[in-house]
Length: 389
Image (tube, rainbow, N blue to C red; front, side, top):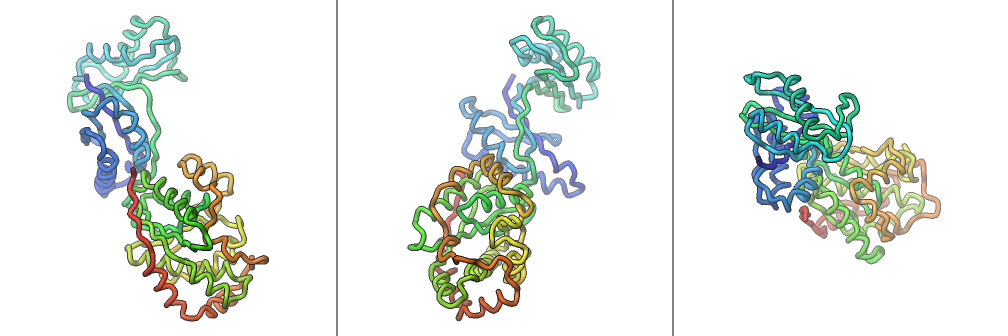
């Protein structure tokens, strides 16, 4: 008997004739996650298997696979030749060694066998009860399930626990998106949610040194690194924003500081998105959460984007939901660090909450040589290629 890890995908079953494309991308992403380990990855009959791995690596392999979007669940199983006596013996070993309830589930893809699924399940359960009389059968709500998966390839896989994975769609099947990444709770969660739908994530962060500290920049780099196991690596642009903010502060109405700043931010993000072949911008905006996220503020920001759509996956989520998601993806502790980003620089006392579009445009026009300022910022951007460590 050999130990293997069975991998299952979910939504891909809904795909039609192009399902093979999605399966191919998923397989590529699985191989990338397994790259640090000595193991074998195989695909047969819509099943994925990880084999020939060291037991010492099993936990680490599982933790990586749990973060591969497109995988629905996995199980550690024993693999053995399809022979009834061997199946019964392995099922007994798999059954719990403490009192409790159990059920046997059998899937029989090999139709050449002399017994059907129900007959195999009954006989397997009877063998388990004789070997472990402290167990009892519960077909409806058992504490433990012994799964017997008999495949057409002459092998049977027996396992107990099923481990939930990330679900969603394989990263790379839904195009590319440019994430406006700050040091808060929201934008990392927004990027994660879009990656879950199959989008390859690029990111841009605006840094206002010396008005903000170098720790603020490192905080965002750390957040991006937290996303890399899910996203398959991220290209992060760290754009110097100090000169632009100073010019906005000097030339524009103070109450429109945030409005104009965000308009310039999305202009820069769009240019970087076009450079990387991204088809959209992604923000962490949630309707009504702060002054810059009222309907009017969002409209005035999006007005500055010339060609690309802006995706806002958190738009109807409240702060509690976002922070709970941040905890689940392990960005919460970094996001709560006190280092401030450029959005806190030159904050007006009374920011415009419901800016009229005409007024927002007029204030931005006061920013002389805006295109030159944007070009300067992009030219000075630091580009970081972040990979899973």
